[in-house]
Length: 235
Image (cartoon, rainbow, N blue to C red; front, side, top):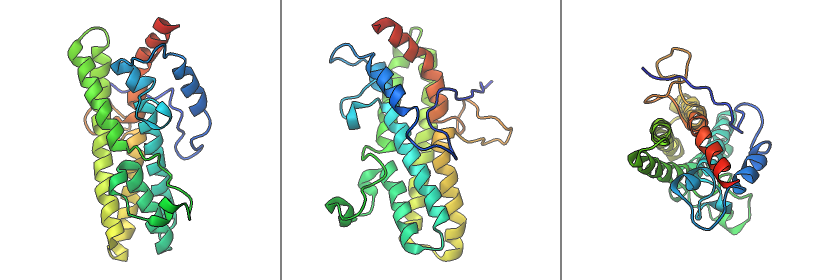
Protein backbone atom coordinates (compact mmCIF):
# COMPACT_ATOMS: atom_id res chain seq x y z
CA UNK A 1 0.00 0.00 0.00
CA UNK A 2 1.39 3.35 -1.01
CA UNK A 3 1.71 6.19 1.46
CA UNK A 4 0.37 9.65 0.77
CA UNK A 5 2.50 12.58 1.77
CA UNK A 6 1.93 16.31 1.74
CA UNK A 7 5.00 18.45 1.18
CA UNK A 8 5.32 20.79 4.12
CA UNK A 9 8.78 22.38 4.12
CA UNK A 10 9.04 23.19 0.45
CA UNK A 11 10.23 26.68 -0.30
CA UNK A 12 8.63 26.69 -3.74
CA UNK A 13 5.04 27.87 -4.03
CA UNK A 14 3.73 26.89 -7.43
CA UNK A 15 1.57 29.44 -9.10
CA UNK A 16 2.69 32.13 -6.66
CA UNK A 17 6.07 33.19 -5.34
CA UNK A 18 9.28 32.66 -7.20
CA UNK A 19 12.63 31.56 -5.85
CA UNK A 20 13.16 34.28 -3.28
CA UNK A 21 11.41 33.73 0.02
CA UNK A 22 12.44 30.75 2.09
CA UNK A 23 15.38 29.72 -0.06
CA UNK A 24 17.96 31.80 1.76
CA UNK A 25 16.87 30.78 5.23
CA UNK A 26 16.83 27.08 4.32
CA UNK A 27 20.26 27.44 2.72
CA UNK A 28 21.75 29.32 5.65
CA UNK A 29 20.46 26.76 8.12
CA UNK A 30 21.83 23.96 6.00
CA UNK A 31 25.29 25.46 5.75
CA UNK A 32 25.38 25.63 9.52
CA UNK A 33 25.42 21.82 9.56
CA UNK A 34 28.78 21.50 7.81
CA UNK A 35 31.60 21.02 10.28
CA UNK A 36 34.51 19.98 8.05
CA UNK A 37 35.48 19.41 4.44
CA UNK A 38 34.30 15.81 4.33
CA UNK A 39 30.70 15.40 3.24
CA UNK A 40 28.78 12.21 3.86
CA UNK A 41 26.33 11.02 1.22
CA UNK A 42 23.40 12.54 3.09
CA UNK A 43 25.21 15.85 3.59
CA UNK A 44 25.82 16.02 -0.14
CA UNK A 45 22.11 15.50 -0.77
CA UNK A 46 20.79 17.72 2.03
CA UNK A 47 23.55 20.19 2.96
CA UNK A 48 26.24 20.88 0.40
CA UNK A 49 27.88 19.33 -2.65
CA UNK A 50 31.26 20.44 -3.93
CA UNK A 51 30.42 20.79 -7.63
CA UNK A 52 27.03 22.52 -7.43
CA UNK A 53 26.56 26.29 -7.94
CA UNK A 54 27.44 27.94 -4.65
CA UNK A 55 28.15 24.50 -3.16
CA UNK A 56 24.45 24.08 -2.49
CA UNK A 57 22.95 20.68 -1.74
CA UNK A 58 21.87 18.40 -4.55
CA UNK A 59 18.25 18.62 -3.42
CA UNK A 60 18.30 22.41 -3.31
CA UNK A 61 19.97 22.57 -6.73
CA UNK A 62 17.46 20.14 -8.24
CA UNK A 63 14.54 22.20 -6.93
CA UNK A 64 16.00 25.44 -8.30
CA UNK A 65 16.49 23.87 -11.73
CA UNK A 66 13.01 22.32 -11.66
CA UNK A 67 11.47 25.66 -10.72
CA UNK A 68 13.35 27.35 -13.59
CA UNK A 69 12.02 24.75 -16.01
CA UNK A 70 8.46 25.17 -14.75
CA UNK A 71 8.56 28.97 -14.91
CA UNK A 72 9.97 28.81 -18.43
CA UNK A 73 7.31 26.35 -19.56
CA UNK A 74 4.63 28.66 -18.18
CA UNK A 75 6.17 31.54 -20.15
CA UNK A 76 6.11 29.37 -23.27
CA UNK A 77 2.38 28.77 -22.83
CA UNK A 78 1.78 32.50 -22.34
CA UNK A 79 3.89 33.27 -25.43
CA UNK A 80 2.28 30.75 -27.77
CA UNK A 81 1.35 33.48 -30.25
CA UNK A 82 4.89 34.93 -30.31
CA UNK A 83 7.28 32.47 -31.98
CA UNK A 84 10.50 34.18 -30.86
CA UNK A 85 9.47 34.45 -27.20
CA UNK A 86 8.09 30.92 -27.26
CA UNK A 87 11.32 29.52 -28.67
CA UNK A 88 13.37 31.31 -26.02
CA UNK A 89 11.19 29.99 -23.21
CA UNK A 90 11.33 26.41 -24.50
CA UNK A 91 15.10 26.67 -24.84
CA UNK A 92 15.22 27.72 -21.19
CA UNK A 93 13.28 24.60 -20.22
CA UNK A 94 15.88 22.47 -21.97
CA UNK A 95 18.78 24.32 -20.35
CA UNK A 96 17.33 23.86 -16.85
CA UNK A 97 16.91 20.12 -17.40
CA UNK A 98 20.00 19.31 -19.48
CA UNK A 99 22.30 22.28 -20.21
CA UNK A 100 24.36 20.44 -22.83
CA UNK A 101 21.20 19.85 -24.89
CA UNK A 102 20.19 23.54 -24.95
CA UNK A 103 20.33 25.61 -28.14
CA UNK A 104 23.72 27.13 -28.91
CA UNK A 105 22.66 30.73 -28.47
CA UNK A 106 25.91 32.66 -28.64
CA UNK A 107 24.22 35.88 -27.54
CA UNK A 108 23.60 34.42 -24.09
CA UNK A 109 27.19 33.23 -23.77
CA UNK A 110 28.48 36.62 -24.86
CA UNK A 111 26.29 38.42 -22.36
CA UNK A 112 24.38 40.32 -25.04
CA UNK A 113 21.05 39.15 -23.64
CA UNK A 114 20.03 38.13 -20.10
CA UNK A 115 21.61 34.87 -19.02
CA UNK A 116 19.91 31.55 -18.71
CA UNK A 117 17.20 31.12 -16.06
CA UNK A 118 18.67 27.80 -14.93
CA UNK A 119 21.89 27.47 -12.96
CA UNK A 120 23.76 25.40 -15.54
CA UNK A 121 23.93 22.26 -13.38
CA UNK A 122 20.91 20.52 -14.83
CA UNK A 123 18.00 18.77 -13.17
CA UNK A 124 18.94 15.40 -14.65
CA UNK A 125 22.48 15.75 -13.32
CA UNK A 126 21.24 16.60 -9.82
CA UNK A 127 18.62 13.84 -9.70
CA UNK A 128 21.07 11.29 -11.07
CA UNK A 129 23.57 12.01 -8.32
CA UNK A 130 20.87 12.03 -5.67
CA UNK A 131 19.55 8.67 -6.85
CA UNK A 132 23.03 7.15 -6.66
CA UNK A 133 23.49 8.54 -3.15
CA UNK A 134 20.12 7.35 -1.91
CA UNK A 135 20.83 3.86 -3.21
CA UNK A 136 24.05 3.84 -1.19
CA UNK A 137 22.22 4.95 1.95
CA UNK A 138 19.56 2.30 1.38
CA UNK A 139 22.18 -0.41 0.86
CA UNK A 140 23.98 0.53 4.07
CA UNK A 141 20.82 -0.18 6.05
CA UNK A 142 20.21 1.38 9.43
CA UNK A 143 17.59 3.88 10.46
CA UNK A 144 18.02 6.00 7.34
CA UNK A 145 17.39 3.22 4.82
CA UNK A 146 13.59 3.40 4.77
CA UNK A 147 13.46 7.15 4.19
CA UNK A 148 16.15 6.82 1.52
CA UNK A 149 14.14 4.15 -0.27
CA UNK A 150 10.97 6.25 -0.24
CA UNK A 151 12.80 9.37 -1.39
CA UNK A 152 14.51 7.39 -4.14
CA UNK A 153 11.16 6.56 -5.74
CA UNK A 154 10.32 10.26 -5.84
CA UNK A 155 13.72 11.22 -7.27
CA UNK A 156 13.45 8.56 -9.97
CA UNK A 157 9.96 9.84 -10.81
CA UNK A 158 11.37 13.36 -11.07
CA UNK A 159 14.04 12.19 -13.49
CA UNK A 160 11.36 10.45 -15.55
CA UNK A 161 9.24 13.59 -15.72
CA UNK A 162 12.35 15.56 -16.66
CA UNK A 163 13.31 13.21 -19.50
CA UNK A 164 9.77 13.36 -20.89
CA UNK A 165 9.74 17.17 -20.62
CA UNK A 166 13.13 17.38 -22.33
CA UNK A 167 11.98 15.25 -25.26
CA UNK A 168 8.79 17.28 -25.57
CA UNK A 169 10.64 20.61 -25.44
CA UNK A 170 13.07 19.44 -28.12
CA UNK A 171 10.14 18.44 -30.35
CA UNK A 172 8.53 21.85 -29.90
CA UNK A 173 11.78 23.67 -30.61
CA UNK A 174 12.37 21.55 -33.71
CA UNK A 175 9.31 23.17 -35.25
CA UNK A 176 6.02 21.31 -35.11
CA UNK A 177 2.97 22.80 -36.79
CA UNK A 178 0.80 25.28 -34.94
CA UNK A 179 -2.01 22.87 -34.07
CA UNK A 180 0.36 20.25 -32.66
CA UNK A 181 2.34 22.91 -30.81
CA UNK A 182 -0.81 24.21 -29.14
CA UNK A 183 -1.43 20.71 -27.78
CA UNK A 184 2.16 20.13 -26.65
CA UNK A 185 2.74 23.31 -24.67
CA UNK A 186 0.25 22.52 -21.86
CA UNK A 187 1.77 19.03 -21.64
CA UNK A 188 5.20 20.60 -21.23
CA UNK A 189 3.91 22.83 -18.44
CA UNK A 190 2.29 19.84 -16.71
CA UNK A 191 5.47 17.77 -16.85
CA UNK A 192 7.69 20.55 -15.53
CA UNK A 193 5.24 21.21 -12.71
CA UNK A 194 5.24 17.48 -11.94
CA UNK A 195 9.02 17.61 -11.44
CA UNK A 196 8.36 19.72 -8.37
CA UNK A 197 4.90 18.86 -7.11
CA UNK A 198 4.42 15.33 -8.39
CA UNK A 199 1.57 14.00 -10.51
CA UNK A 200 -1.76 12.46 -9.55
CA UNK A 201 -1.31 9.73 -12.14
CA UNK A 202 -4.23 7.56 -11.01
CA UNK A 203 -6.65 10.45 -10.53
CA UNK A 204 -7.49 9.70 -6.91
CA UNK A 205 -6.82 13.25 -5.75
CA UNK A 206 -3.61 12.37 -3.88
CA UNK A 207 0.10 12.45 -4.63
CA UNK A 208 1.39 9.10 -3.36
CA UNK A 209 4.84 7.77 -2.56
CA UNK A 210 4.80 5.46 -5.54
CA UNK A 211 5.89 5.09 -9.13
CA UNK A 212 4.84 7.91 -11.41
CA UNK A 213 3.47 10.20 -8.68
CA UNK A 214 5.73 11.74 -6.00
CA UNK A 215 8.57 14.09 -6.97
CA UNK A 216 10.95 16.63 -5.42
CA UNK A 217 8.61 18.20 -2.89
CA UNK A 218 7.59 14.81 -1.53
CA UNK A 219 11.23 13.68 -1.43
CA UNK A 220 12.07 16.81 0.56
CA UNK A 221 9.36 15.98 3.08
CA UNK A 222 10.46 12.34 3.39
CA UNK A 223 14.06 13.42 3.98
CA UNK A 224 13.15 16.14 6.51
CA UNK A 225 13.74 13.90 9.58
CA UNK A 226 17.20 12.98 8.28
CA UNK A 227 18.01 16.65 7.78
CA UNK A 228 16.90 17.43 11.32
CA UNK A 229 18.97 14.53 12.63
CA UNK A 230 22.03 15.89 10.81
CA UNK A 231 21.42 19.24 12.49
CA UNK A 232 21.15 17.66 15.95
CA UNK A 233 24.33 15.67 15.48
CA UNK A 234 26.39 18.63 14.28
CA UNK A 235 25.04 21.36 16.55
